[in-house]
Each structure stands twice: as C-alpha cells, then as structure tokens.
Image (cartoon, rainbow, N blue to C red; front, side):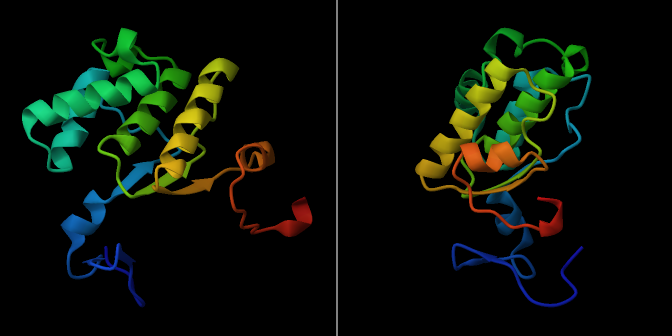
Length: 161
C-alpha cells in the first residue's frame, strides 16, 4: 500500500513510492504483536530477516549471531519460536527489527511483557543503536520508557499526563 499523499524518503535517496524494496530494507520494525513463525527457530528467523535485507548466507549467519547475542537469546536460538515465553518473543521481535543495523527503527511497545533484567538490556541495546546513528522511533504508553531513555516525545493526548 502506498501513501495517498505526500512522500517518504530515507537517507535522501530511497523513496517509498518509487523504490519500495530499497526503502523497506532500510527500516527495522518491531510490532506490538510478535511476528515469529512458530515452526522456525530464533536463529532461523533472524537469518531469514538478514537474508531478506540482502545479506549473503555467511554474512546473514554472522549478523544473526551478533543480534541474538546482544539480546541474550543465544541459549534459546535453536529452539522453535513457538516454545518461547511472551517476554522472549518480545526480545526476538526487537532482534528481528535490529538485524543488519537498519538506519531507521520503528518500535511499538518493544519491552512490554519483558522481565526487568531483560528490559534493562533491551533498552541498553536500543540506546547503543541510537548512539551509533540509527534513528529510533518508539511508540509506548509507558512514560518512564521515554523519560529514562532520553527520547524525544510526541503526546497524542496530553490531557492524560
């Protein structure tokens, strides 16, 4: 689906309307619902996303391992995603969004349902991505996520705060 008006361009060269594949390959998306295919392992899912971003098989495997390590998923990487807990699926969703270091990350409630230790690690990973130059857009109803991590804010219902 293309925008009904206006345009979206990334890095002054990838236009959503005219270069959709290149545009979308530059975006990492972590939806609020978990996108994992239950029959695949976490490693298979991560390598699949790396390949879809255009990486060669060996590079995809290496990148997948780095992403799994960063989010503390290495121990579970070879288990089917269908056996993961809700919090582990959230970490995998973030892992999938971040694989290949896309210049734009769109994160919808990335740490919802994640235990405090894993949540702290997730936010550290997000902060490192931001500090490395990736643009990060976060949707969250948890105000502390925004305040604690020094994120710019957009309020849609300021009367609620």
